[in-house]
Every structure is written in structure tokens, then in C-alpha cells.
Image (tube, rainbow, N blue to C red; front, side, top):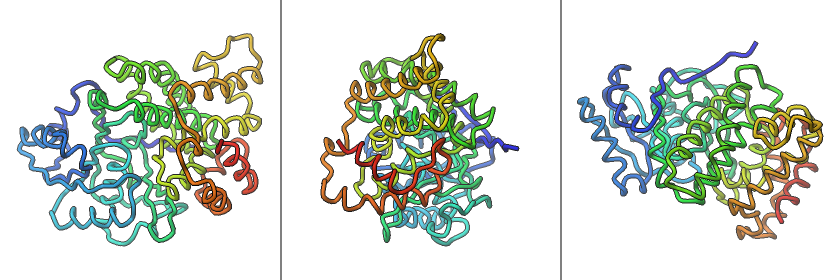
Length: 385
């Protein structure tokens, strides 16, 4: 029987950031640590958040040294800052990296230890400090998930860490924070969210609740992503994709992700490719290989996204899904690993290790077709060009 997990409170809509202080007050939280990055600090966004909190008499301290694809070393620094500052909660403010850093710091600041001990299949259900997630991108869905991803600097492994402890107590989802996202980030995070929705729907762990979220997310993201990319100031498109991203996060948090994510994490760890972009690089090839495992489910995805008319067979609909994903990558200028400039010799040399790490993450086991290492290497090779 599936157990549904959700944030305790969600504030959503344009201007929701202004309600953050009030929401913290309701939860009895008075001393937050804002975990963020230098861009949001220098742009004035952090000061705006601090002002929202100050209006409710809440004084926040700021850790702005997060890094893309958070590392265990950065998490240790953030946890030490939170602990020494005497904070009663953490606010992850930014894209997936600051939020994932905040989630991990909330645990380590309360219980100590190292993230290496908490990687999957371990489940961390003992709550640390309360987590507040305020996304500034429309993609990761981390504001609604019981997962965080941290890179082990000793092994270059992106560690999946799971459990109720990582589920935010409060999510503040304000699409206005995404209005300044550049096109590249809009595309990569949007396809990341679409990947979450598709993988949640086809996952072996899918259930009626996660299905409802995944379907709503696919419909919203597919409807809005192109407009958000081509018309960055289109508020309706930004709002649609932001809502879809959160719904996709809820979906995969309650059903898990699959092969795309398992293969994506090693690319990020070894080549420092942003997570959303590495997902986008892989999505068409992985989907094409996987459709035979559950043709009906992939056909459902095509129909939800209005890619196939009612008269199409499941096989026809699934083929149209794969073609549409390839066309989306073309329209949104998603590069292949080769086009992105990754070192070809190093890429091929690392493939056996990357395949091993992908399988070890556990995500490929949720896929409709479960690959072996040799198959994963073959898909990596197909995606390379």
C-alpha cells in the first residue's frame, strides 16, 4: 500500500514570497538560516527575502557559499554554519543545488555525521531541523520531495539520499521568482521537470496518487515550456511550468524516478554538467529504449501531452512521444554530450564506472525495462552524438 508524503504547508502563486515570514510564524520558527548562492545574494533577492521575514520580526542569517551539484564538503560547511548560528530551521533559497544543500545541512546540523553514511538504500526518517524550500527555478521539484543529491568528493559519486527527513515542512512556490531565468536554464530545468513527470508515471512504483500528479504535470509542462523559453516575460507560461514542476516533484517523490536519473547523475558527478541538462541529453534515447517495457504507459504520456490522436495504437503513440522529445531538444537547443564539449576519450573511458554507479543508485530498477551495465553503456554511446 503506497504511503503518500507531502510538505506540511505550501504557499503558492505570484507574490507568495511575501508570505514567508507569516508562514514561519505559524510554524513557530524564529531563527532561520538562508542557504543560497552568490548570484541570489548579489542580485538582491536574498535581501528581499530577509525583508519579508523581518516584517514578521524574524531575523535570518545567510550562508551563500553553495555550489552547483552540492558536495559533501559544502554540506559540512553549511551544517556547521547552521549549528554555530543557533538556527531553528533552514531555508533553501534558489535552484536545486541550494535546496539540496539546505536539506542535507538540516540533517547534519542536528545529528552530525557524514552524508556518505546516509546514501541510498539507507532511508533517513529521523527529522532534523525543519526545512523551508523556496525554488527560484521551475524544474527540480525539490520543494516537494523526500530526496536530496550530494556528490561524494572522494569518489565523484552523486549520492542519492532519501527519507522523510528531507521532505520540506514549508514550500513557497512563487513563479515570479522564475521570470528572470535565462533561456538555457528555462529549457534545462523545464525538461528536468518533464522527465520527473514521465518517469514517475512509468515507474514500477507508480500508484494512483502519483499518477494523478504526473499526468497534471506532463500536461502543464508540455503546454508551457516552449512559450516560457521563447517568451521569457510570459507570466502565464512561467506560472504553468512552475506549477507543473511542483506537481512533478510530488509525483516522483511518491513513485521514484527511473533510468534517466540513474544515468544522469554520473554525468553530473564526473563532468560537472548541470543535472537538468544531463537529464535532457538522455531523455529521448532512454525513452526510446524503455518503451517496450510498458508500451501502454508511454502511450498514455503521448496522449496526455496531446501528441497522439485517440485512434493511434499504443505503439504509434509511443513512437510519437519519442519523436516529440527529440524535437523538443532540437527546438530548445539541448546539446549532446559531444556538442557540449565533453572530452571524448575521458567519456568512453569512464563509461563502465558510470554504468556501475547508475545501477548502484537503484533508480534503474524502477524502469519499465531494467538494463544491465552493457545496455547502459550502449545508451550512453547513443546519447553521445
